[in-house]
Amino acid sequence: MKKLKSRFILALMTIAISSMLSSCMMTKTSVGAYRETPGNEYTYAKGKQFWLFWGILPIGRTSVNTPGDGNCEVITRFNFGDVLISGLTGGILTSYSIKVKAKM
Image 1 (cartoon, rainbow, N blue to C red):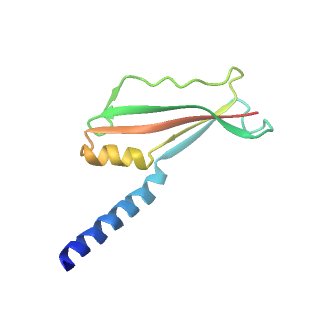
Image 2: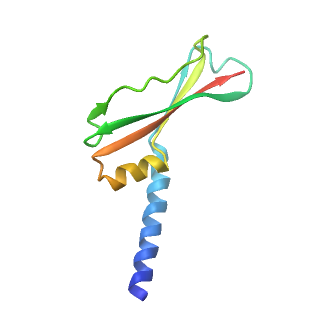
């Protein structure tokens, strides 16, 4: 019983540490006059990009809409759902989440 409990705690610690380390796999790119434009931020569009063989070969190209004026911020991150996809497939299939933010 102690062996099962210690394995469960080890698994929880591994998941917690891997989810904390994935935050370094995020990029924020401001496009146009996004930083200078006043207003509240909102999510304009979302998408997911999939890759094969540990990120070597993309599966298609995800097109995420952008505002007509071109002022936005594109955020690409490797979140917990992406960690699960990568972990369950051994890295053969990976994904990244893409979010486009704009201001009102």
